[in-house]
Image (cartoon, rainbow, N blue to C red; front, side, top):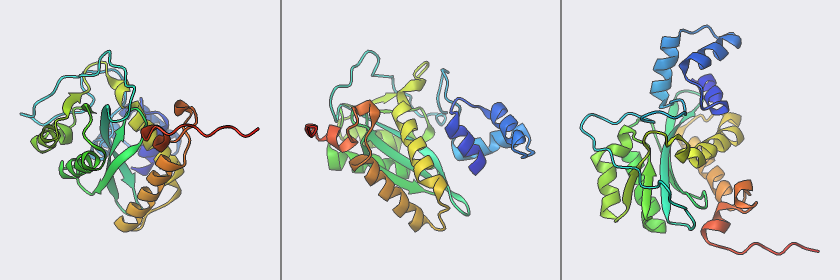
Length: 237
């Protein structure tokens, strides 16, 4: 699963067939059916234009996509949430994070050993309580985000709900970049022995990501600089 995750992070457009082929090139003999099963268990799906980026549960309401033609120009205008797989020395966890779309700031995160909706609800609630409700809260159509528990929490705070649909595969690109940075710079360099170790390591990295790590897409400013609308420091002569 860790090998699959690394290959996926390198090429998120890869589905089960190319990942199986690349595993075999590394000497791992594995059937495609097992790759499919493990990717489902990990919550991974290839990123490309398609009808649904993730599958909702039967009976869950799908909300329309609200960001078509919208220019995101300020913090707190749009929040986005996603889930990723975190490998450990033994076993694995899931990580949910909420980011501010304009600044890329990670507003809240939660770790869980299951894929129920509760840890996503907790992350969304914390983000809104700490930083205020956004105009729009955007997610994919995964079962966690289409659940009544998650959508009710957003409605209670007055946030409009938006869900990626057909052709909207690029909308979670900022979260995907966060996952890639987190895993390459933190997670893959360690083998967490416990949940508490994983929780501390990830929290420390996300603080660094927000407060210290400059982003080229933000004119080499940090997410906190943009979120709090700080003026860039003058360049020394």
